[in-house]
Amino acid sequence: METELKAANTIRRPVRGAQAPPLIRDESTRAAASALMSSPPSAIIYCEGNFAKVDGKTANGLVRHSEAYRILSIIDSTRGGQDSGLVLDAVANNIPIFDDLDAAISHTATIPDTLIYGMAPSTGRLSLTDRGVVLHAISHGMNIVSGLHEYLSDDAEIANAASEYKVTIRDIRKPKPSKDMKLFDGSVASVEALRIAVLGTDCAIGKRTTATVLAGALNAKGIKTVLVGTGQTGLMQGAKYGVAMDAVPPQFCCGELEGAIVAASETEHPDVILIEGQGALSHPAFCTSAFILRGSQPDAVILQHAPKRAHRCDFPNMPMPTPESEISLIEAFADTKVIGVTLNHEGMSEAEITDTIASQSQKLGLPVTDALSRPTAHLLAMIVAAYPGLRQSVPAAVI
Image (cartoon, rainbow, N blue to C red; front, side):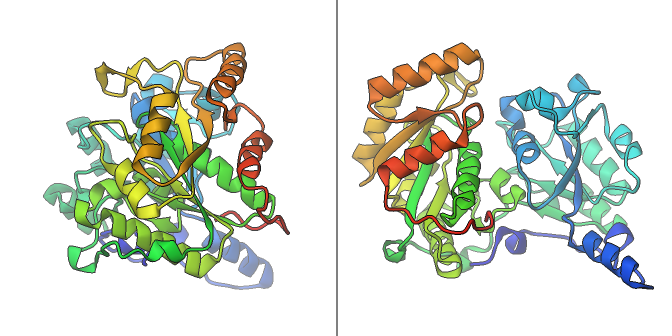
């Protein structure tokens, strides 16, 4: 199966500027040039008014982890002048936040390669203000990456500007032709790796973040792990295998995910395959969790929950489910088991996190931890407790 980078629709431009192959005059220059050419493209993330909020989850995720792009800065005038790491996780990361695109560009030695649209609005569409920023970036010669349901490469004004300035548009959610899509055929049953899905009780609750932290921890312990992405942010981060599930016609969702898992298994021969969850099985606005459970046929599930979240995102009249009810639904819907719960600590004090971990663990009879605020050893212990036979060897590279 092709990776999303290959499948995504693009408008081509010639390689130039910082991306162009330099003239090699001596060995020191050759080494420096090699390092430059092997570095991921640089990027500024546009997240006006939404950084560190639910609708800014794409920017939040890329600031925490990105293999495909070298993140230089964030644009959000409501937090201009601050360090994005301090804002997001109370740990400095030296990725600054600027008020606008011109300010962000002025702090770089060369024009960055890419502008990433870092928001996931419920409308899935570009606002007039956002359109102006995208066109301004294109006029500077910057490529555009978007995870919106509205395909920017199909927008006449944006596509014409991209053609004029010879830049690319990467629409993460733009699917390949249906004739090239795969129907479910049951081949996932032949995958020998342990398959674990990270699901949740709501959308934008930290499933991808927990899966990413867990993948890194398992690989660091020599348990070779591949993370299969199922949403736009995971694919932007550089997931080698995956598909934007909510952009695929329903009849192909299970088959496309199955194909990504089988490809990861056959190519990487991992011990563990983690599957990023989407939405929530109990959420009436999303079907993706059902497709993920059907297409991946997971051996186990980790459930992500936000104890202080009173209602579903964007649905103020829809109360959050309890972990107990979501676990019961998952285990009734699929032949799998929930082996642990991870917390999203939004709105929680340190003492509340500690108390909740203890009380929920006792109440559910399952290990409970927080992937961001607690040691990764606790997350690893959750997996090893359920599967003590997992092999540990020389640490593998994170995939």
